[in-house]
Image 1: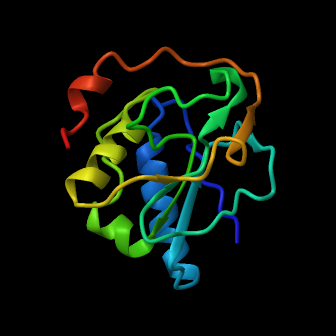
Image 2 (image 1 turned 90 degrees about the vertical axis):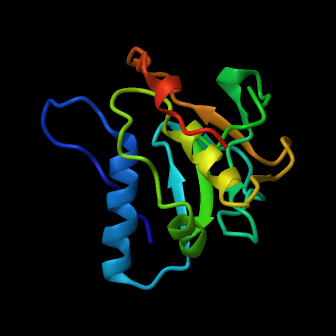
Length: 150
């Protein structure tokens, strides 16, 4: 089942809160055991990139065209990722303190590591995505200061 969550109004964007709300609301509909969080601007290129949970959280968007189909840095869990409900609870979901663009995905990567989990990935030739071109907000200048350390 696909559940899309969007903010209303003119307030500053909080992606992490939206994802937490999506996880909570989906649990009211059905007892899911796997959550997939996916940026709306990413289109998968390869149908071998299965959207399913594993023993460890799975970063799905390993190779994105706008990033030259390379992983920009090792500790990334942004774009698209799959995490079991048990793992999501273990890391206490996403931090709601990230307003504006950026930081919540790096914070999640740190939470994953802090709680004894690791980020798994499919090979880059399978985990390929095209990003739909769009206007990007300016990054939150506090995003690095707000990110928890692993």
